[in-house]
Image (cartoon, rainbow, N blue to C red; front, top):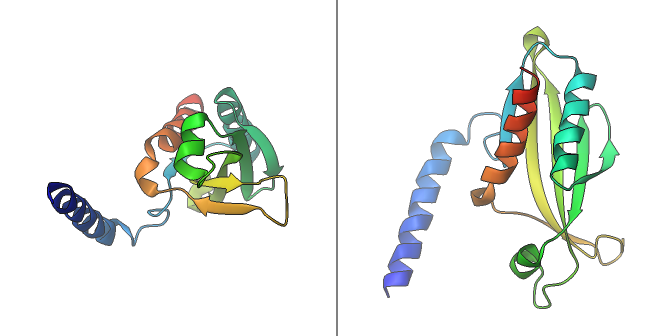
Length: 147
């Protein structure tokens, strides 16, 4: 009974917290940062280096989007792997949006992907925004290196 009350309280707080920030660009993303006074190529190069150092491999890149993947850990597999807890790949999509004055907004969204190498059985799910600290830390590191 206490657990049910606790979960209800957490969900209620989450709904109210989401109502206020949901109107800002990127507010539903796992991470968000703005970079000023740097060229897009330099920002993307730094982004690739930071994610690479964290164990991610770049799998896709355009001027607007970079996609990074890493094999899921045992913890990821248990959290996102369904009944078997196997074969999970963690994917982060970083979008680059040009802003006025030569600034860029970087937005990261994280996904768990089951059967990533099989186009027919591939199944991706956006991870909960509650787990945003790590991704925000990565984008903060990109911004820090570019200051």
